[in-house]
Length: 110
Image: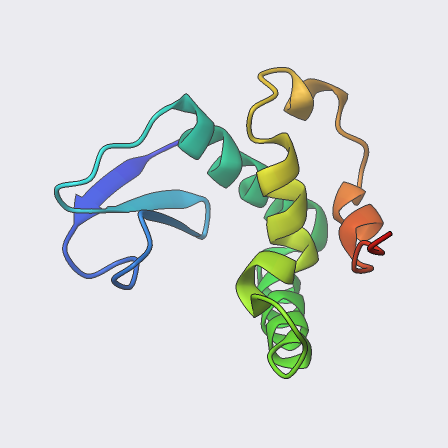
């Protein structure tokens, strides 16, 4: 994965962002394997949906979740899949197609 350090992307408060399969890292911040794996999961999501559809669904889901309780960004199914599996070095080898769908519904609290 190509990694570009710069001062514009991502927005302040974020360490890294994946745009079109390229990882942009905020200048002055370091990324590790977990961060890279997180963004690689997003790249896989983009490849299976198509880049345009990925961003359309991402935006729609974020907008729908904005008025809901909790953090809209962290509740997006694409992010939930990436955060849940970023620590697993073998995840992308065993990941099923459209795995993000399983993270679409909010987890029920007991």
